[in-house]
Image (cartoon, rainbow, N blue to C red; front, side, top):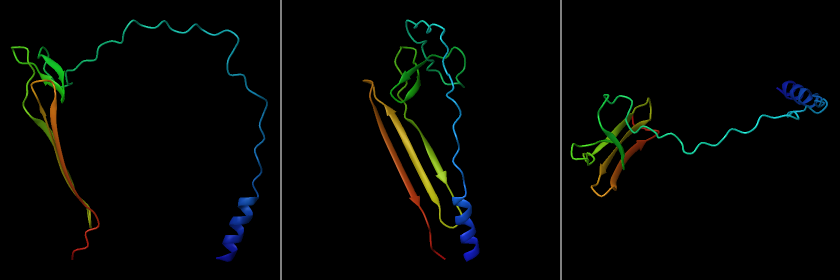
Length: 121
């Protein structure tokens, strides 16, 4: 074990520094003019990728929302759930719900439970 440690120290100290070459020019004397700025960025689509064509969708406080025939946004709650598992010690369960409100706000609730290193036998 001592021989291995001594050999590692000798090899670690035996490295030589790298010598730099001459400077390298990275920009030439003639450069292309910068691109012209656009008046505005193109609008982003609020419709999810799996939405049927022609379905009215608008961005709401909780993400993309369906538009009702009267022009208001759909206000049904939606969310997600998560589950995890593991061997000898990992457990996870979580859920989140977003409820859009009529005045443009939202109520968000999230709950999570984790357990690590379970020692029961």
